[in-house]
Image (cartoon, rainbow over all chains, first blue to last red; front, side, top):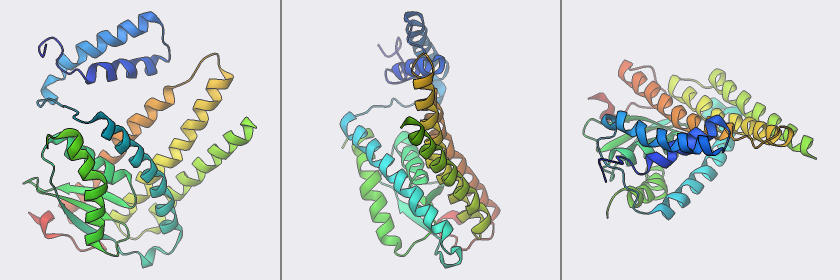
Length: 163
Length: 106
């Protein structure tokens, strides 16, 4: 099974992306999409050495919804900070201790942090124990760390890593 | 009715894209400047893309969902480029308003 279908999740995703690219749902394109989705993982196998397993798909859906809402709020918060007085901002670097182990979970956490309110992930330390994050305006570093861990890291851990 | 919705979306998108670029001029150091554009691309471009999807789905012959792909690619690439820029800046030890953490100095 694993040799015939290296990435069961990537195949349907690629097929859907193909259908969106051609903007059509003809039978021929669906077939071509499935074919591409099946063939491309063979060529990109080296980039995905670990098998990606989603343990809790429902948590993933809820996580996506939360992130979308946070992105909306992020824009308003950052817009207000930019239009307000930039000299009063208190930017800071914050090191977040990571509980995540898998590559995909860490990269998704870093992406999420960059997309949401006033934070950009800047560096993953060589020992993979900390993620250094730059925040635009911080009053209390500890509560920011706690919020990120609770809001993003915990669901990601549930989704991608066996507890 | 639809025209009002579309105009609203386009104006909102333009305003947020503008605020993002304004951030580049107003903020004080490299790291804080990073925040402006990364946020602008999400809601600013997002609004414009929704407007485009609605317009072409109702005016054209068929549903237009190209825009979903653009959103997907933006959401994948914007944080990655921001991360790489910040990482490069840390290595180059650019002047920063915030104290550089010890963890980054290895």
